Length: 191
Image 1 (tube, one colour):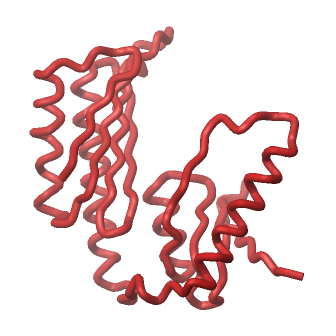
Image 2 (cartoon, helix red, strand yellow):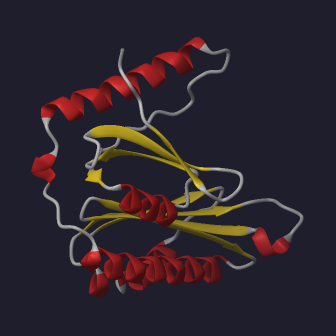
């Protein structure tokens, strides 16, 4: 497990780094193949003291991304709360994973990768044409899964949308949360 501890508006000393590392060591009991764990600790100057210190933990394991974020009035309480939250997510993920279909990464064909790349390039070009500026770029692996697995992954990440390779339709789709707490699915068609 590769651990990265970063501080934003906050100096992370060795004692704090050791504390985070010791607490995150619990994760190895539940997930054997943890690639990287990133812990971002930050201090915000807010009027509300209960949200002063924020701990955000992101981990990559077996091709899955799991994220948790908590804010409290104490840095160590924020770390503990976010680790507890990520442990609950890991347990839920492991429970669902056993029931889910087994799939191999080899199922992704070059055609699917090219289609996903073309879609991302198109989105980037569209974003460049708008009046705003691109302030951050991300790259990610497109993993084949069905719609239920995509919903689970989106919920684990805590995002409002998720891009995935729909193994049922053999196409790249975008799943998003609607205002009525249901889900929408964007399916591109090429002319």
